[in-house]
Each structure stands twice: as structure tokens, then as C-alpha cells.
Image 1: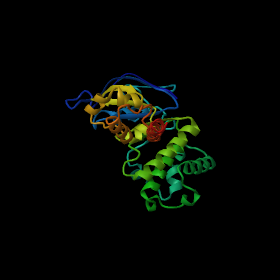
Image 2: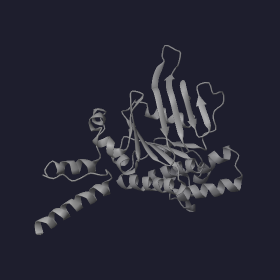
Image 3: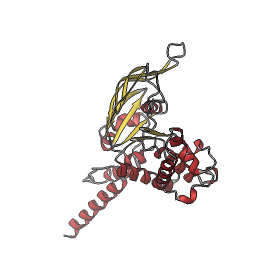
Image 4: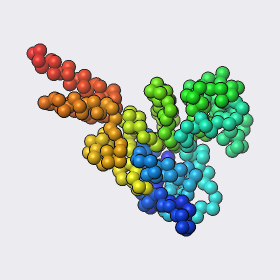
Length: 291
């Protein structure tokens, strides 16, 4: 499902002395079935931007087309977007509130009036997607580990079968293993369902591993829209000026290249790809010396 923003502006406290313009003249198309990262300084407009994509906020100017639904400033009804665009807020485990994991995951579909059998079936499927088996159904969400709570909260969004999933700082507070495990689950969902994922993040290593496209915000405007490799090569000075550091694997190969007469080519900034490029370079170099 494609999302298109045309001349979008947004201000809090519009028309008052406290008016604060947060988004300015946003023109973007978010294509279907991509993993898109949204980055920028704190206060650059990232979170406000994504809250427009599922109708939590309405623009004060311009329009947003989410599939066949248009959102404008004077929309009198809340567009029915929660089953189209799901949002997992930062630290989603803080949103758990029901007595059991199954009840918590079932809350959204139940509110929409889904049949009970369908709710149960879809809730179990959502649990399976995030790596929680049926033994978790009757457990209190408050007795789960931090990682399990996050998975349960994400399942409560996936159960709605959204076409677009927004993850706001999804790996905050997780260790390296937890980060990778969670993101691999999200990647599996993306590939299996052919759906779009939008990730708001400050983690450039996460961006390097999973994003296909990057949108950079600065002072409420879109500064750049590009791919991760181009972002950290062609636009390196721009992003460093925003306080965004390159991923660790790219920094490593750059330090190596500073010492080599012939640099190692960088065709990807994913960690495994860079490791392979470094290994190939030295294997070839050793072969030349031995011949």
C-alpha cells in the first residue's frame, strides 16, 4: 500500500500565540513493500511525521493519501486506518494492560467487532509470528521478561494485519541479541506478508542492516531521501552535521582503507557484506603475493 504526502504542514496549537510548526512542506511517496528508515536529530519532526501516517494526527495543511483514504486538515471523521497502518510506539511493553497475554493481543480486533473465533485464531497467529507459543496465552503480561513483553505488544499490532507497520525506536533497551532477534522477526513478517515497515531510529547499525531506503529529517523538513549506502558515502558530511555516525562496519573498512594502497571496494554497508568484502580483498592479496 502506497502512502503519498503532498505539501504537508503541521503545527501544534494552531492559531494561538503558542503555535509551533513542526512539519514544513513535506512531499513524499512511501512505496509498498519496503523497509524505510526515518532518521534525524531529536525534535526534527520524525515522530510527528509517522503519527500522520495512521491518522493519529491530521495535517494543518496539505493532504496524505494512505492507499485509497485521504487525510486532510478538515477531515470530520477519523479515517479508519488502524487496520491499515499499525504503530508500535517506543517501549511498547508499557502499553500492556490486560490480565492475560491473549486478552491484550485480542483487544484491538475485539473493539472492532471481529467474531470471537476469528479473534482467537488471529491472536494465536500473531503470537506465533513474534515467537510466543500458546503457553503464553493465559500468562499475565506483567510477569514476562522485557523482551517477551515487547513481543506481546508487537503481536497486539500485527494481529490487525496492517499493510504498513511503523516501529518507533524498536530496539531501545534491548541487548545485541535481543535487537537482532526482534529485527529478524520483523524481517520475516515483511518478507512473508509482503508489507511495508517504517522504522524511526537513532541506531545507524540497525539502519545499515535492514533499511532499503532512508528519509532524513531536519527542522521539520525532509532533507534527504536516499538508500543507506549513498547516505553514508555521497551525503556523509550532511549526516555527520546532524550528529549521525556511520555504522561500525563501515567505520572499520574506512580505517583499513586509510592504511591500504588499494582501497577495499564498498558496495554495501551491511555488516556481513563488508566482512565478505574484507575477506575477499585479503584472500586475493595473499594469492598475488604467493604467485
